[in-house]
Length: 292
Length: 292
Image 1 (cartoon, rainbow over the protein chains, first blue to last red):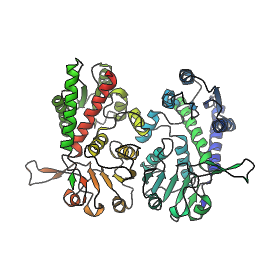
Image 2: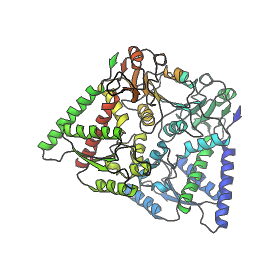
Image 3: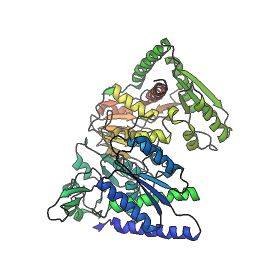
Image 4: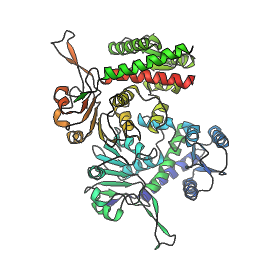
């Protein structure tokens, strides 16, 4: 069993981007610039955004963090996005989700100009992804592709089973893995809450992508020997042995599944760091589109 | 075995649209209006476009057929599309594919305004489809959904196997059947040229959608008893017993597969007529969006 170490793969990508950014500076060019909007004070969102901003600093990207109050109106938020659309030196815009209930996420996503849509959620980005045109792939699926690439995991002709059909992970993942490219060219089965014989289907998976958001859902009896297991879940579970009072669990029961796998991602330290790597790569690509 | 008779289902939809159009006229409203662009003189394209125009006439829709020479420049074609985008009384625009090689299909598809994109190929339409937002679904997949609906075929929890990953049929079909709605809620497996154990996988299919474009590829030994089989293929095969010199074959070996099925589409007369029904429904929906 080999660990698909997301920290390690993300580090390699960050080092590459650091070098590329240093070269840009030597050439007298501006730095790639990511602008993040954070509405309100949700704890998890604060952590995610902080981590994105910190990583930008580490690799030499410029970043802007725009903090907006929880009671901002939809119109005001859309105005802020439009300002960033217009701002010449901003290459990528992300609005941290979820948003307060009085604001339409769909409207916000569509307000970001497709050329700066580094989260890859705009319909234009999604549509281009489906037709295989160059585009921004949503950060988590993109991170997973980068992870498979980094560890040279073979995918062609493999049967990939994706558990979960969210718009952010499961559905794009199933589309991407079926494309005629590497990583891809998998036969892909997408499963969800209406799937009847999930265990049988999982047992067919040469590759399993677990993205349903239920702690330790995938157990050893669902995984065939030699499978590649990608665990997208990350759930806080009460744990009195920890100082924090909780521990982080993936969608896969790691201890019992890992021994059966050829490759498996840990949680944390698997898909999580790769999501940020995907976002940074998108930001760099947005920069290149503008400056090449 | 019950035949999924596309002619019959399409007729029901056309009758419904005829009535709705008659009511619009009674209310003093304009007719829904489909504009088609045909470049060059390809025989099959001529037939398809003629059939679309004829059906518009039958149900009371207005239609415009713009014929352009094979040597038209990309720019001129894009200008023609822009004129139709601007034309207030045109609700839907379709450009018959394929186009001559000197013209970028992707540019042409993107030139059609999303609000008039009744073929559903614009990235915005595709992106909205993936995220489950209201949109224009490409005509063939939409026609298949309408067919399943018309014959009240159960889909929830079924395992659908889609053979073929084209952007026009296979990929959208796999996305649509996995959505949390009816028709949908299937576990979906998408197969293609890199799939290894196709027969085994097909044998799991409660629903099989054959969209690979190879005459009589799906044989009885690949289909389980009671399956629902949707045959999207239509290939001309030499046939000296026919006056025309050819006969039309689907992707499914109908004679031997049909007896095993609960439902199966004939070819011709199955998915074909439903594709036009899908296009007309999209045109009507485009009209409603504008006039409601």
